Length: 337
Figure 1 (cartoon, rainbow, N blue to C red):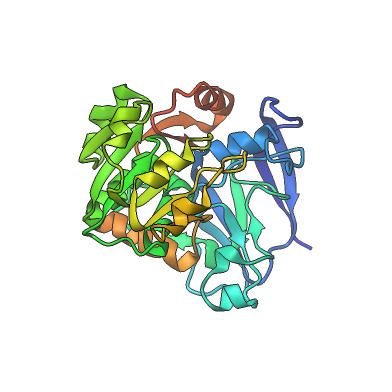
Figure 2 (figure 1 turned 90 degrees about the vertical axis):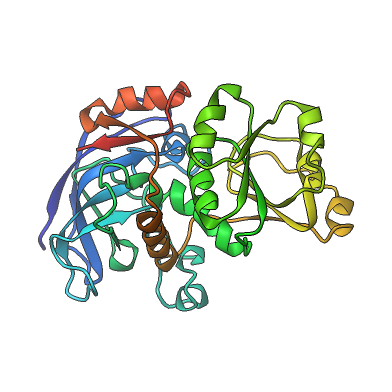
């Protein structure tokens, strides 16, 4: 049986430093591809997993799920991909391909999906493996040094736009102008919407406008929020902290949708009458399917959309984590192998 030696960076305990780590990949499966990592985004989910905030981290832990690289090896039944193709791999690296969700195109909802950094080793390595369906070809118009964060943060905020049926005529709001929110502003602006950014950091106003916001509202100013009661068709929450949920529901107009992609750990207190009286709804979603990921990349290529990134060398991975943990990242970090 042929094995492949992988050089990676791993932590051996929660909140611990990442150190050089090697492991063997077994023989490649018939529908798998091995990707030679060139760039890999550093996402806040990597930090949450490193710290075991979600209680599902196994150590040694190799983070990294915003992979950009070239295919180095393919299984015998791989379709549509060849050695040398540049692809991206995100949070999901496999799904069963035979359940109702997979067969209907919602592979990301497969109960048997494989998550790139859960129970296996991720992309802060020289090679990462995944199913061919989840290795998405990258349009040549996109900058390979910046595209990695689209495979997690990007698709996370792109999916709700289609899921909620957002129209170009809609008035939309984005809560939180960070790693997720700054991409949501770009998507929604190019979608044709009137876009409002809600932020607790007034210093981000100029940047938010440059990314597509038509107005910026201080989320800590109760009077400023009340000025928009009943105004929005769609509000996207990208923060992972508890908010005054009833206030934001009041900002929705009839049939409005409040959609969260921020992983808020506390229960959300949602008054029933806030939903009933205006036929409003509260929703959430994970990332998106392989097909939707391709659509997102094509949309980015067409409209010149890219994450705002800071680049670190892969060998400086602990410095990059410290930068992220301190809240200084503007707005996504990418590690170069």
